[in-house]
Length: 349
Image 1 (cartoon, helix red, strand yellow):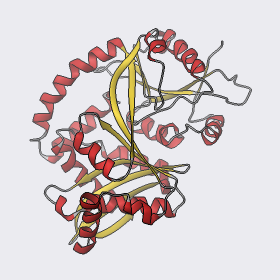
Image 2: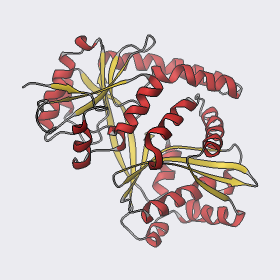
Image 3: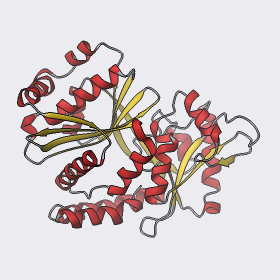
């Protein structure tokens, strides 16, 4: 079997495959890949068994991540919640992965990491030195029911009541992708990432996302007396809207800004013809986040990432360093925190 490579940023066949393949997602989209390349220098590549002079029948997407800190590796795909192989059968996927693992050296890479959504045969992946590395829950909400049914599906006390509280408080609601909205979103993001002992993503990442996605990216901000209290950023692809980033002001959760924005997102997505809300990943030990997404009426799906054994070892060693750094980051002033994100994120895609 011959395996070819294509550039998904320039090969029009990739867009055509995404539109007709049921597993195509926003994380395969040219816009996402373009923002990754512009922001972090990651080079996207697709491995396929389709010859260059014929239609593209399958493809497994990766990005080349090159870092002096974390090493050179192929990731499918950086900062994505999931990245399904666009293939016709599991056997096809294993054949392409075998080729990728065999030819790592030719791409000056040391490790592979894959982020499938569907179940993969762990035994066959183990033969390629790919084993489970991290487990998550992915929450998805069907938008097929009516708006009234969707609202009734929200948890009465923890979501419905807070939505009504936000409306009673008279929270101001704005949506779009303007510079003022991005500014308000980013200031809240800095606060939220500090609470989680993490640096914020670089501001230029969000600017590149806005430039790439245009009207298919939406920032929603809820404010009280001109003070932003919560914000969400979503991306749309085909008939799925994906919640990618959320943030809130310190000490103002009582106003119900976050549940209010999620309900706005659900209702607007329903009205625009979307059929699914992808609520993204939650780490298995993040009980609070999992519970909140459950209370939105979403279905939780367990998913597992796989990577090379040496990369698992390096990730495990890096975990202790990240926890120590987290304590320091929480005390950093905002400009220093932003600078840390500017420096570090490109190494950890």
